[in-house]
Amino acid sequence: MIDENQYKIEIGNEELEYFLQSVFDKYGYDFRSYSQAHIKRRITNRISMSHLDSLEALQSKILASTSFASLFIKDLSINVTEMYRDPNFYAAIREKVIPRLKTYSFLKTWHAGCATGQEVYSMAILLTEENLYDRSLIYATDFNQQVLDTAKAGIYPEQKTKQYTRNHQLSGGNTSLSDYYIAKYDKIIMDKSLKKNIVWAHHNLVTDGVFAEVQLILCRNVLIYFNQNLQNKVHELFYESLAKGGYLCLGARESLRFSSVADRYQVVDSKNKIYIKKY
Ligand SMILES: C[S@@+](CC[C@H](N)C(=O)[O-])C[C@H]1O[C@@H](n2cnc3c(N)ncnc32)[C@H](O)[C@@H]1O
Image 1 (cartoon, helix red, strand yellow):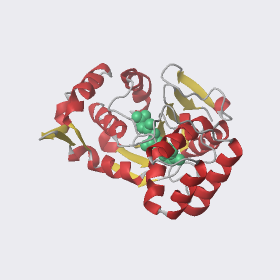
Image 2: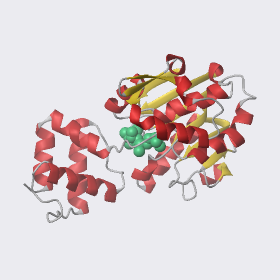
Image 3: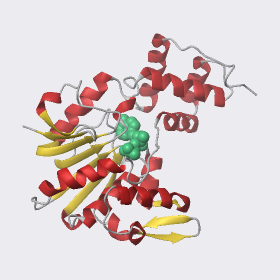
Image 4: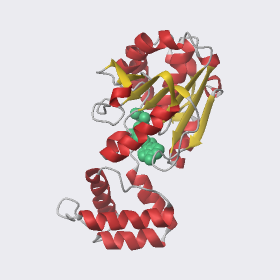
């Protein structure tokens, strides 16, 4: 049994590039522009968990086995999420964004990197509370099919409901969260009414392009794993996808400040990372 703490593998940048290129060539998943620190951490973790002794051994295993490759690709996608994550962000959306969205006859929202869907259901509930859901279409995308399947099913552990309920209240929710799910054994199942205007789709921010013009984009806690070049590329994609006067929302530790598109947006709420497209 390998002791993770004693077992340290140093990975050079060049061998990392070669390794990521081979994964891209074989499977079409492009992690070459992800943050190196993040990738190296996940690789050493996988090497250790799979009782391997080098990056070379990991590469051989990945290239020889599709199921092992899927496991590795899953390692690289961090799917941590929750309902009304950062309640203040949702409170700011209610206060600073919704009034303007209410003036639109139809609203399209894109959740890029939606993971298991809690962020999407949070927004669907918020739009319902604000009487906007019936004139909304929500695109929810991720490049990990497994999390998308969970998102689509909308079934979550019942033990999370206490925290989700607290978050919902802190976000300014004016209904009861329990109105939107049914509890069955140790699970909750999100209500069908929330799903009717949601389109779930596989979309890779690195390799896929614009698919719709939208008025609101949430891409929270995704870009943090990308290097600056890739962040810029994805920001160009968001800029192209947003209607003029549309809103871009990032995660708490993300910012538009150093991006190539920063001057094309105005800050709506700097703490909650909400921006509006100026032109
Ligand atoms: C930490 S989760 C964020 C979930 C949610 N947005 C939130 O803030 O709670 C990051 C998600 O980004 C997705 N992701 C990572 N790289 C991606 C890419 N290139 N294209 C699409 N989704 C990606 C991962 O699969 C994961 O589900």
